[in-house]
Image 1 (cartoon, rainbow, N blue to C red):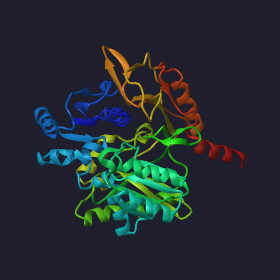
Image 2: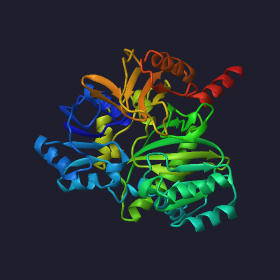
Image 3: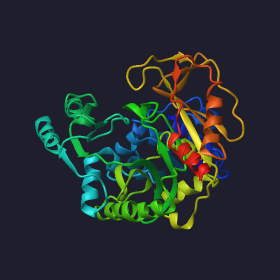
Image 4: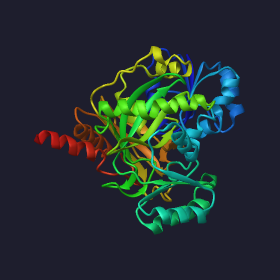
Length: 427
C-alpha cells in the first residue's frame, strides 16, 4: 500500500514509526513531517492547510490510504475533501470532528444522550459568563470553545482566576477559539485518557494512559499540551473500561450517527474517574500527544490494518494485542514553554536508543544539516519496563544523554502509578 501521513509532531513520529513496521506498506510519505519521521517516510513539502494541494499529491502518487494525525486539518475538513476523490482516509469528517472543534457541541451531545459529564453553560459574552461563575462559586473550569492547542482550559481554584480566564478568552488570548466560552463544574478525581477506534457502527477499545498536563512537578503550574505520559493507567480497571464503553463511548457513537455525523476515527476520551465512576472531561478526535507515543510502544499488532478497518467500516473483523509491560514518555520542552520560548536552539546530539526505547521528535527541524528545536514540546523520550518505575528509570537515563542546553522536563512523570506500585509492594 501507498500511505500518506499528515502531520509533523511527536504523535505523528510515533505513528510513522509503527506504520513503517507494517509488511503491507510499499511506499510511505509524510507531509510535512519532521527529521524523526524522515527516518521512516519520504517527507513531502505539501502545505496541509491547502486541501487541494494535498489532494493533488495523492492523485500524483496514487496514494491508497491517508492517515490524518493532528486535529486542525480534521476540523478544517481535510478528510472530507480527500474522500470526494474516493480516497480511503483515517480520520473523521469536519462535522464529526466538532467533538473536538467545539467543546460546547460535545457538552450538548452529552446532555442529549445522557453521557456523564460536569454540569455546564455556554456563553458568548463575558458579563453573563462572569455572573454565572459568581453564582456557582469555585473551583470551576473555564474553557475556550474552539481549538487552542491544549492551552484554552483553566481549572480555576479562585474567583479572580476564573474571571481572568473569561477575559483571556473574550480578549483574544486564544484567537477565534475563545469567541465562545464553556463554563463547567469542577470534577474531583483522577484523570485518565481512554482511546477507542470507531468506524461509525463498531468500537474497538485500545489502551489507557495518563497524561501530565501541568508544567511543574507535583502537577503544579499552568496547563500545557502534556509533559509526559504512561500506559496503561492503573486507575482504568477492567470494570472502569467496561463502564466507559457502555456509559460514554457507545452513547456518543449512537448519538453522532443519529445526529447525521457518524464518527469514523479514534475517540480520545479525556476522563475524570470520580466517586460516581467515569465522567467525560472532553473529547479529542485524534490520538493523544504524548499518549500516542506510549501506546505505540506497547502495541503488538500491526497498526495499519487497524486504521484501515476503521476507515473501511470493518472494525468488527480485527483485534488489537498489547504488551503487558508499561511504557512511559517524558517531554523535553524548550525553556519558557508554555509561555514564550527561544526557537532554533541547537540539539547537539541524541542518544542511541536500545530495545524498548525511542526518542520521538515533536518540534525539531534540520537547519543547514544541524538539528534544532523549533517547538515548545521538542522531544518525547520513551521507554518500556517491567513496572512503571522501571520504565521511568530507563526513560530518564536515556533523557540524561540528550545534549540540548535549552531543554527542560518534569522529573516526576508516572508518580501516581509508582506510588500505587510501592503501595502494592507493602501489602
